[in-house]
Length: 250
Image (tube, rainbow, N blue to C red; front, side, top):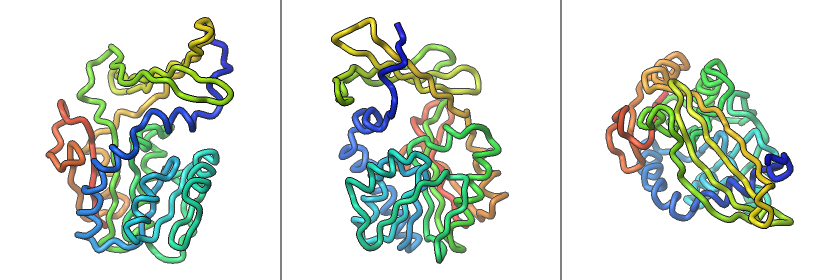
């Protein structure tokens, strides 16, 4: 039975489903290489979630603004990391202009956030904002789940774990599936003490292609771009890569 009572704010679910130390250890070297190559000192983290990447960048001595549409996520980021000099948080969608006094050196949108946009028009606006936010020669990094390696139809279940959602502990099951040119992140949240209480949600994902991301970046003012299939820097292969990572320069 679906009750509609277990979901509410999913910030705790989002936090619990990601092994953040492991993820940042895997992704950090990729960003370090590119930031050093492009002499990055100021970073905009669009759709920053609860702020883990932004805080990592700030820990490297960079000036960082983390922005997210979710006020709950920004509240969590601010509560965990504060706002010391050089670290700022803002409640703002990735397709809305910021109010920075000077251009950033890099703008990133990680964690498949761009695919959750309502439509391609929103993605195009977000790309325009990311490119316009950086100086000439600045860096734009977009990370997406590569939907095209998934089978068409069946759900690929990825995680199943207990999560503390006050005042109770719940069981969370997460999967992803593709249907034609669209993807979906599937969540099931159940109360282990009352198996009849269960909630589910399927979040649609846009099936974005590398070529169209490149075209959007070019239209927004990027001068060059390349694609990678993972954070180790492997070449992007549509049918098999785990990730679709675009690195562009203005």
